[in-house]
Length: 262
Image (cartoon, rainbow, N blue to C red; front, side, top):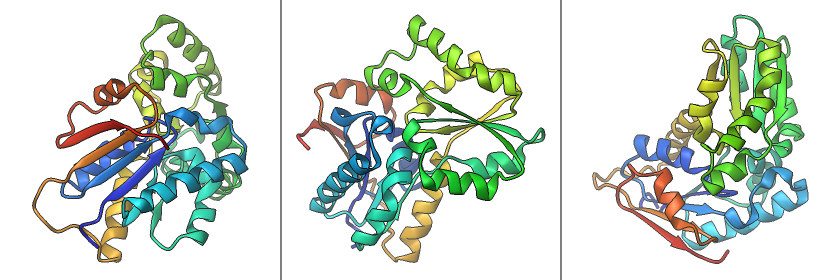
């Protein structure tokens, strides 16, 4: 079983930010990434729709003989992972906004969370926030058009940057010192965020923590690939723009990108 692949899925290309962290930490694993760009963004869909899409992706992952599934989408995690864990036998790794480290590190006790509407309105997010940030002022902002910009490859366009600047104003007004990125697409706009936000604001995402948790679960279940052969990476997307995905992961080796209906 240790030779079977790890499968990730997301509502598009954003979860490749998680894939890169996983490959860095687990270079001998085989990975399959399912980019459900046709249905992006998940953050604007109902919880029922998100569960349905997550089940579709999970069933496809099982057809590839997945040994572990990474739900590389904050919205899918917060809305569907409990359902997935109760209906399937293999391990699932989810992605949650890094509220805990931000809240514990904040000196001014004010942090920001930039996430999709689907994540911010979920019960899991509310529970996490109440547990780890009950004494912290948490400023929540719904990201608008960010997923679409990352999917379309126009994150450096002047119009997008202007719109992003407007979205960030509540964080500046609240004088936060940590900004949590609550969507796996958002790490791809960190260069823009660093220009638009005050220098003292620390930006954090969940990528490395997810990779560490994945390795821990593989060890615990005795399914870590112990070979010393670089793993293969297969990316499947259900839209035509495969070149954009390659541009996002230029440093990954042994990679193939293929269009597939799912």
